[in-house]
Image: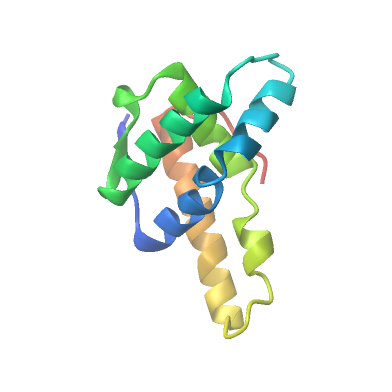
Length: 120
């Protein structure tokens, strides 16, 4: 199992889109079936950590806490990146297909590293 997930420039944009909204992540985690109760500050710290790792070009699965993994999972499962990009000015059909491939590839890499299945 490869625990180090390399992050491309586009994949960083995908992660950045959700991780810069830690309040949305905290709300989603606290409303989930698992009944997690995490504070906004904890989620914000985790999101900042994940963004720092992603900006460095890779996220090592073994360096993540359980909360980091939950935040990462939500940053993919709760992502609105593709929805907000659809129909964007200047985005060609080829560009749209590329964004979808980047998203799917990112999810596949994290699932291979141990992330539970993300709804797509």
